[in-house]
Image 1: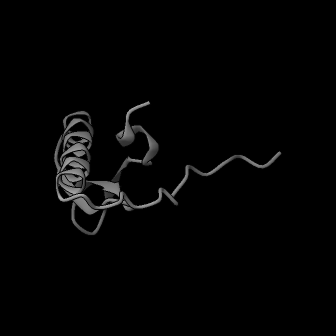
Image 2: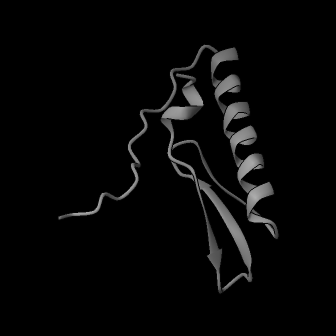
Image 3: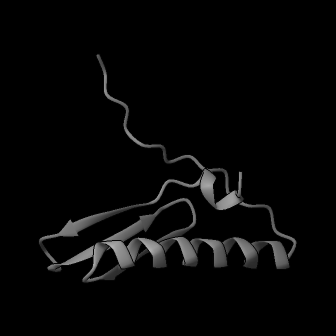
Length: 73
């Protein structure tokens, strides 16, 4: 598994901003755009860039704490 796959990423609509917001809170605050599919691809690229930056500086990656919500039976 690639390091970027350990981090939860999602896209949501923001009524306040009238745009889509891409989030990966364990790595970045977020990005925004008009096309949710394109935005998710960009979010993955940005998350990968952040990981590569951490590695190039010899820094430890943040622990991925944010997980998808699970449906309770």
